[in-house]
Length: 349
Image 1: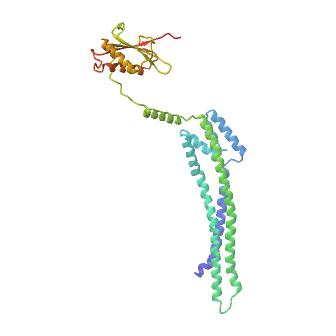
Image 2: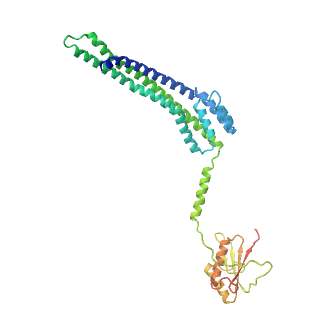
Image 3: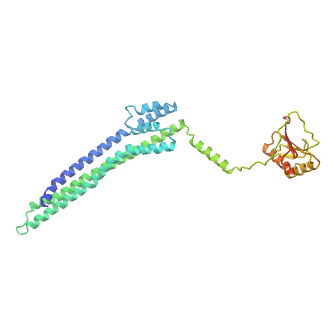
């Protein structure tokens, strides 16, 4: 144990020196890497982004890629992220932004943070090594005091042990304090690099989105509207109504027919129990049924429906259904009612 304590001094001094050298090496390496990743000044960054914007307006994506991969820019973070964005521009804006953020954090920030963590480790370890030297020196000093109780203690023998205790603590603090300042400087530079990349990539993605129209939201809205109409529409089975096919050139006698005329009104179609004229007031579907029922009583087995061209076919079918209700037992057979539908073309005014 005493031998280990005697050797603790040189070991601790050597460890502190190596830790200080490695910490300075990490700080210098990080500063060089950050300087390589970012533009030299704002003017250089602005000139690069102006060149990229001009090529994007001409949809010269190959030209943008060639510019980013040229010697002045191939080590910079922003041009390299632009190359990644161009290679994956088929993704939507949201997914592309997320992918670029993950790519930057994984390929650029991860290495910088890894090196920076070693500086933090050395800052924490150096004072602890100094404290270990302090404890070792004090143990050696008290051991010599205990061994020399009978013959007295030589102050010069204790001085070296006490100096070990003090010098190791001082060297530990002298290592930790400068590295703490260097670590803070490096952290600020990493933050500035991150802000620059975020700012320039936001500008680039805005320009890219102006050139590439993403129709994905339009497709989503279309499908939502389609589903909405499918859910809210009411499907009704059409009534069993047999209408004989039209016979060209064959007239139908109005004496043996019940006539119903439908006019296209301002709000909704109007039904009249006349032969093409507006006599009286419009009637309801129940009155149409009664009108046809009276005709059946007079031996009229034909029903003629005259409608303006603007009347919806669904409304004509509703009138025909109301007329057919007057002869529900006939079922549209030869002995039942026969329907004839005509379209009235009126002269344009």
